[in-house]
Image (cartoon, rainbow, N blue to C red; front, side, top):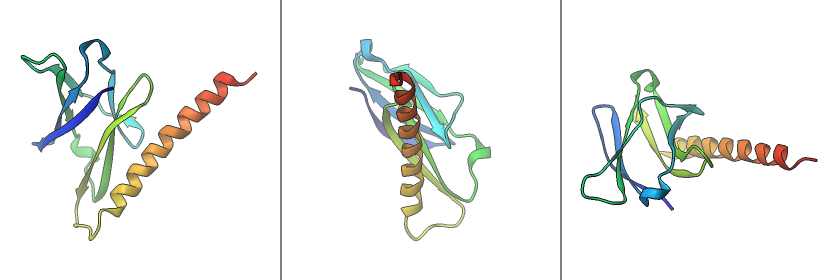
Length: 123
């Protein structure tokens, strides 16, 4: 099972470390509002047999007032590995909006998986 640990957000690029076995490397995609981001990179960490440096450039066009949630998942089975939110504009009293946005994104993933399952198992 793969796991991701956030390391930092710097100069518009979210960085993390993906830990998994070399033979189990997932096909990573990062979604924002169900749209895959471009430019996501996964590079083996030197002297490690199970760690990869993950870099996710956040396009400036996506950063507007409000909360923006990003979901990092395995493209092949849509397993969510982690997620992160960026709050832009006026500060919010609570980050409840970020949680709701994340729940919406995860619900959409579940709906797609359920629909696919129903189509595959229908007689």
